[in-house]
Amino acid sequence: MKYIFLINCIFISLVANADDTIVRSWNGIYQEIEAANIRGCHFKLSAFVKVSGNSSESKMHLFLIGKNARGWVKQQFSEQLQASINQDWTQVVVSGQIKNRISKLRIGILIENAGVYKIDSINLQFINNSGNWKSIEIENGNFNLELENSPWILFDNVRGFDFSVKSDSSRRGYSVLLIDGSDHYSFGKNPASGNFIKVNNIKLYYESYGQGKPLVLLHGNSQSIRNFENQIPVFSEYFNVIVVDTRGHGNSGINDDKLTYELFASDVEGLLLNLKLDSIYLLGWSDGGNTGLIMAMNNKINIEKLVLMGANLYNRRGSVKPLINVFLKVKRSKLRKAGQNTTIEYRLINLLLEEPNLEAENLKLVNAQTLVLAGANDVIKRKHTKLINKHLPNSKMIILENSNHLAPENNSRHFNKIVLDFLTGS
Image 1 (cartoon, rainbow, N blue to C red):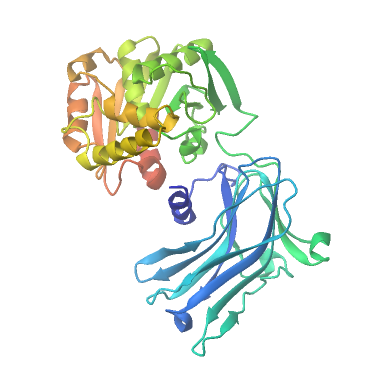
Image 2 (cartoon, rainbow, N blue to C red):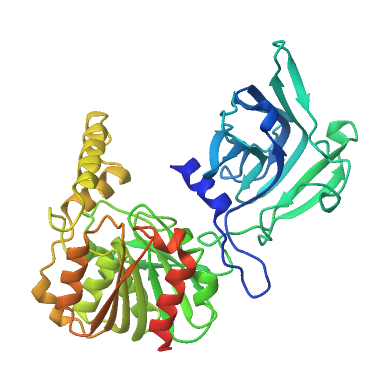
């Protein structure tokens, strides 16, 4: 799943902050090469790399992808190289075969999270008709020139990653690409904006951005604050965005209590009461939407406006597409057989299969003005989304075309505009 996320990230245009920097966990460089003469050939892409830092989350990936008539497609990623304090230079190699219909190649380096990254001697080879390995010239593959004077392209201006070409004594004085991410932070790992509050015998983690009316963001199952990286920079221009790691997710704690959406709602209510917030807007995505609905029915916190993205009242044949539950049950069975039935992964799968257990008739308790959203290809069935909208006293529904359950990530601009129009009344 991690590689799938990274591949998608390469081609998704993310929203920048007002100062044209982006806050997210990854960045990197790439360049494009014509591939017409090496279609069908076996290849080896290699580089010498060095990762250092004080976090085991510092990672580097060497990659090669190809372009056919339909667009960019995955070819191969290297095994990620993780940080070690005394990591020496290591050669990483990606190998495989160029697909026959590939017209262009894109090669490069991806780095993730805070750390110091060094790259040198990027080399691409293929087997020619004589069966011999032959090198393809990679312009500035040894980083003898600054990046701006070469074909290397920076993905984005991501806050906290500084790219430069430096002489390095550990490479006998050769020039190398230095990516200094010592000051990098991403949403969900921002010490300047993050805090813990103890509620219901756990520590709940949250981050706060911007000023104005409080807007609480609640993520989905197995997600975290980081999954709102496309929303936080945009919404914090208008609101005081408070984004929360649900218990057992991200930086928040967990105990042996049975996981339920009622418990999640109680956690968030405790957090908001501690912050002395008696009136808020709330956006809940997937599990976060289920939690938000329960909070709105509880009325312990005055939720003036509520946005639900891909929420459901229960998990039955009429609400969730059946293949999702087949997959979840198979996964749960494998974890149980492996003796992992006390892990957070097992408990979160149980939550999806057994919860929520809400009645449509009880939605009349919701006082909030509500926007009900779902993707046209959502895992939540459209008739179930319509059911939720029908029973909410003051709501409207929008089905996001060309979108699925992950619309806040993969259709973020459209999603953000619809949400902002609703919240700002424009």
